[in-house]
Length: 198
Image 1: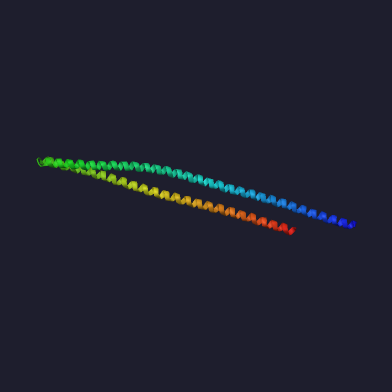
Image 2: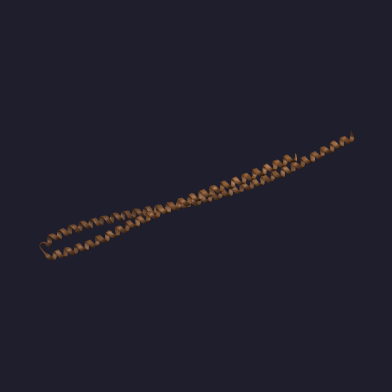
């Protein structure tokens, strides 16, 4: 009976020792998982900061785009005003030339010399009108060029923004999915190992 009691005691001590080892292993594995969880949290935080930085860059680009758009709109307003002034000057010059020509023609019926002077004045006015017409066409071409450049710039900005947003989203989703899968697999392996030891 004494030897049987010693055997039971020895068996109980052995069982206690194994349970203590399992508990120690569990604590170590739990600590490892906590460290990996903290590392994953740091990685996710870094990705979040990177995303915030990208958003800040997009905001800066958007503000620059808005400033450029405002400048271009102001320039268009100035060109439109200038175009209107040139058109008014052209119309005034045409009306003045017409009236002057009519007057000079009436005078030319009485004096040939004055008719010649009227013709010279008409030629000068016509040259001025051609110059104003050329200025008007140049202003219109410049306005159209700026409109085209503004459209291209806007399209390039939108394309770049969409690309960066897509890349960031894919990278974040892939990273989180991979780490979660790794942690899940590690947990399954550890639980399986602990079941086998029991």
